[in-house]
Image (cartoon, rainbow, N blue to C red; front, side, top):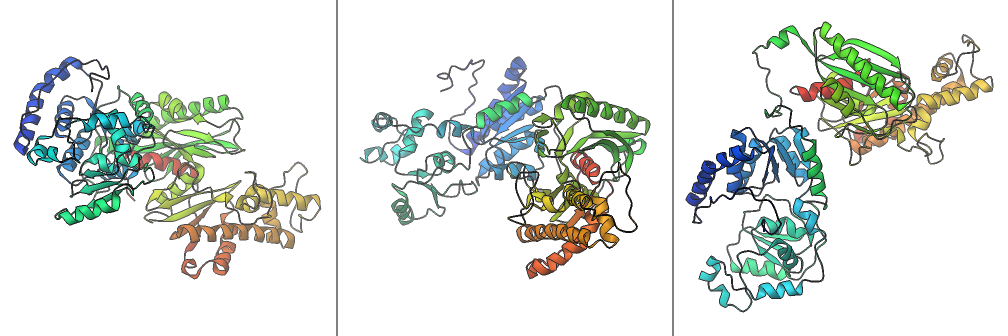
Amino acid sequence: MIEQDDFDINTRLHTIVRGEDEAAMVESVGLALVKLPDVLNRLKPDIMIVHGDRFDALAVATSAALMNIRILHIEGGEVSGTIDDSIRHAITKLAHYHVCCTRNAEQHLISMCEDHDRILLAGCPSYDKLLSAKNKDYMSIIRMWLGSKEMVRVMRKKGVEHHPNFRAVKHVPFDQFIQLVAHAGCMIGNSSCGVREVGAFGTPVINLGTRQIGRETGENVLHVRDADTQDKILQALHLQFGKQYPCSKIYGDGNAVPRILKFLKSIDLQEPLQKKFCFPPVKENISKDIDHILETQSALAVDLGGTNLRVAIVSMKGEVVKKYTQSNPKTYEERIKLILQMCVEAAAEAVKLNCRILGVGISTGGRVNPREGIVLHSTKLIQEWSSVDLRTPISDTLHLPVWVDNDGNCAALAERKFGQGKGLENFVTLITGTGIGGGIIHQHELIHGSSFCAAELGHLVVSLDGPDCSCGNHGCIEAYASGMALQREAKKLHDEDLLLVEGMSMKKEETVGALHLIQAAKLGNTKAASILRTAGTALGLGVVNILHTMNPSLVILSGVLASHYVNIVKDVIRQQALFSVQTVDVVVSDLVDPALLGAASMVLDYTTRRVQ
């Protein structure tokens, strides 16, 4: 098949020892280990791609690892339930990069301490062909293989070839095999093909025994795990034969190969080869490192706000060692230029301050793809800031790893590492500032959502006929409770000469803002107090919706307006929430710079061992 696909074949190795017992497997691995070093020395490959869980793949991975060749392993993290698991996981430990097929497999790899940044969830490469393979020209293929005389030796011993309903073959080319599978009445056996690839066609499958017991399957698979009686298998055939199930895409959506190619191209062949493991938290090692004595491990934190651009050096303990602030430029070119300039200056200053910069964390408004370090589209407050790759220019300039996320998510990360969310498994942070944002921590991890739109809490709708929101909707929390919304209401009162009360004064050139409304309310302006109460109630209703949806153990209000809303929010919860969530506490954040601290925490958590 390799020859038919016109591959350039550099070397042929004969390593398979005759025999079908365990000893033959061991001898085959040993023979391959003897022959492979000479081949690899001649080829000098940049990357060795190793697929699956066969014993011969283990020999290839072992040779490459010992010879300092980068290894990309495809289909790691899966569980089948036999010796295949041990081989597959052994290859995972040898490999530097991983391409997995399912979300569960990805989580298994992370649990095995593999670096999340070197794992690609691509789907199964064979699904690229499977999902477009079913066609009408299958009868000729079926007729050809029903006439085959190549019999599997074991089945020949049983006399299967003499039965009119059976034909046994050693091998069918893939293109033809998938046509047979796609149009079969049922597939029976214990091959991984049955529980993985066949799902693409919805063909019914009977999986015998325990070999594939741990694999994820679609609804088309019926397991006969204790296949000890003929009756069980016959009953399974009766239930499955001739059925048609929906296509299962557990193992892929048909776009794995382009993803894998992109992943391969992204691998930096110049970076150190040494493999790193992401171990879970353990007791601190008492051994000392001269860098720890002489330098303060720190992060470079960047906060892109609607008004200001801030860069700070933040220590491991959350101390802002030094902070730089400039007005945020209006154009993309000027903004990128200023970010790079401020980061370079801060990195140089860090050396003088005896701070070792581990990486750069960036907090910005709008929707962000944190995996790629790209701002997908921003808020209206930051112009010319959509489809912006922030990671590449900053990483290329500073030669440091870069993390990027939404400012609401960064606020939640700051609370998790430095604030009142430290040690909590589930909590929600709400930012009350110019807009309304937030972040959700679930099972100690930040929730991003399928399209990086999770925790857009400011756009929870609390009234069907409420005021217009900047997102184009009506009645969002942000339309009631944000700084922009309060400023809008303050201007209305001021235009009607209903804002200022005794004890207040304003200069002619002074812009009316949310703080004037709050001040008026405190001084007894009933209309201002009513507006503030309505805003707090809207925020409270949003929090009630969050409690009913996420059931967090804590809600943290952050931002300049938080202290003015917290008591109203608590009142709304007592009046509107289900009894079972009324005990959830609502607190005001005690962090001074949550956006900067959150940006720093992305660096400090992932470049050091995370401690919850």
